[in-house]
Length: 144
Image (tube, rainbow, N blue to C red):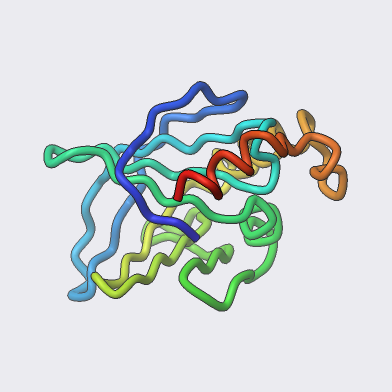
């Protein structure tokens, strides 16, 4: 998991979503989000929240999303699991935790399933290493 300010890069697969955010008191809010995947970073997806104070991007493993659409996945800062939304429709809950707080987001199952299908069509699960941009990875490590 990586949380950072937005660095808008060209994604191979990107979806604009409006997620429902459930805060600690149970209040529900809508938040505009961009879910993105790049073939050059095949193990990761980014979830960018568009806010009035600036964009906020979380990066986490694509495998969490792939698994979490069908069954609970994750045991750290990011957890993903299928659920039933307030309106009785199938949703996927994404829980994000950091020292700054805890957030539960709900997305329509169909939208996340479509996104996952598009990413796995581009880079099938298990074949990510063949698409990894090692030069980019080294630049990120050395630049940190």
